[in-house]
Structures are given as C-alpha cells and as structure tokens.
Amino acid sequence: MLGAIPVTIALSWTLGGALVAKVSPYVLSSSRLLIGAGILLCFSSVRRSQQEWTKGEMLVWWRNQFILAVTGRAIYYYLSSAALLTISPLDALLTTSLMPIFCLFIERAIGAKFKSPLVPILAVLASACGFAAIFSSSSAPRNNALNFGHLEIVVAAISFAIHLSLYNRMSKDASPANPLLVQFAIGALLLLPADVEGYLAFYNFSSGDWLRFLTYSIVCNLLPFLFVHYSLRAFAPLSVSASLVVSPLVGIALAGLTSEAKVSPWFILFAIGSIALTWLVARLNMSKRVLVQKETICLDNGN
Image (tube, rainbow, N blue to C red; front, side, top):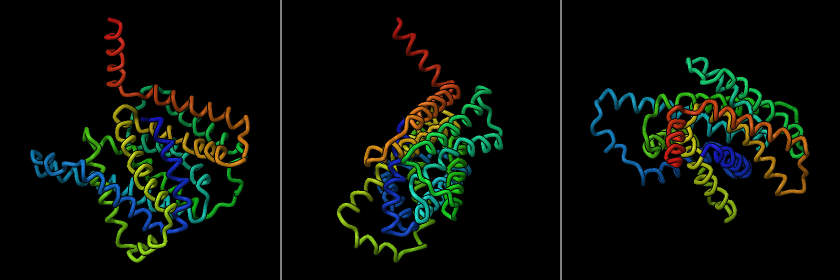
C-alpha cells in the first residue's frame, strides 16, 4: 500500500489542476470531502464503536479527529487547490519532495525516535534525489518565479506532515472507516459555508469534467487516505512521507507518456536513486510488529 500512495497523489494533482479552473478551491475541496464522507458513512459504525467508551475517552477521540481533520483535510485540501490557481501541478508536486524534511523536523520536535541513525540522512538524500530528478527532466516546470501559490503549497505540505506525524498518536482505530468519516465530515463543514454559491459551477460541467471530478473525488480522495491509514500501522510517519517523494516523479513520467516530451537519462537515474532510498527509509524504520510477523511467516513456510 505504501507504493500506491504516490501514484494516487500524482493523479490527484494532475486532475486538480484541470478542475480548479472550473470551480473555486473552496467548492472543489468541500465537495470532495462531502463525497468522501458520504461513501464512508456506508461503512462506519462510530456510534456502536463508542458505546463502551467513557465520556472522557469520547471527548479525547473527537478532539483528536478534529485536529487531524484541520491539518489533513481543511488546510491541506484548500491550500492545495488554491495553489493550483497560480502554479502548475508539476510545480506543486515538486514541493512534496520536501515532505520528508518537514516531517523529520516535526518528528524531532515531538520526541520521536528512529530505529536507525541512518533514517534521517536517507530521508534527506531521497528528497535531494527527487529534486535532482525533477530538474533534470525536460518535462519539469522551468518557471523559477516564486508567487503566493508556492507559499500556499509549502504551508499545505507542512500541515500534511503534521497530520502524518500525529495520526498514529491520535487515531488508534483498527478500521479507517470511523476516523476518516469524521475527519472528512469535519473538513467539509469547515469549508462548506465559505462559498455556497460556487456550487452553481457544477451546472456547467461537461461529461468529461464530471468524469475527472468523480475520479478526483473518489479514487484520488479516499484511496490515498486508506493507504496512509494502513501504511502508518506498518511504517513510521517519516517513511510514509518519504514515499511522497515519488509523487512528482510519477507525475513527470505520466507527462512523458501522455505527450511528446522526452524523459532524460539523468531523470531515470535520479528517480531510481530516490525510489531506492525511499525503500531503505521504509525498511529501516519499519514497525517491529510487522517484522516479527514477516519472520513468523518465513518460519512457517520453512516448516
């Protein structure tokens, strides 16, 4: 599941760049959150799961979901969409290469310990290789002028790094349905009142626009967070954030496949290096529980 996260993220940015020209960032963000909450509602059991909780435990759980909703939904979704008004999707994806560095500082700030002293170094090297791959590609954006969109995407990336770092501490649920439902619903409520009239833009959608929007709201909306939920049960937040380094590489590769742009050999070399370093970060920082399970499976097969 860890490897599927950057693919869905890259697709999300690509589709978002086309959709944000049709509807406002508030409408785009809140509508995909509403759709996600509606789908998750069919699979959730929040009330039943909390019947045996004390009042204090329930308050803590809802407080935690609110914090996760603000950092991983409201702020991240809105600023990500708003940034696409002034910068390209590939330019936005470039910032995700900084995610391991942001997450590294946040993990250090909250006192997290890494299973190997090499993990922080490898995470930074993975980001560096990702940057090198992007700038060595002929498909990479060449506009070096910074604008407000770059600031928005940096804040969004920091917010999502906080979300990843806090997720395991604040969400102990085995199933992702309950916490994700609440997070999507809270995020939608926070953004919904901002631009109610903007929903009229959906009347002008073509069939192609609706196909992009539904793919964006379902495949690129729910799947990444389902993958993140289960990946964080096996890997540390830094490992999951390191996997996002691959997102811009996937975006550039898709651009190369869908156009006549050529991908340089240096891009391939640096991309392989970035992916290999990301794999090492995930492997070295893997949960002890998962390693024990893998060793047990190997022993069972040997018997």
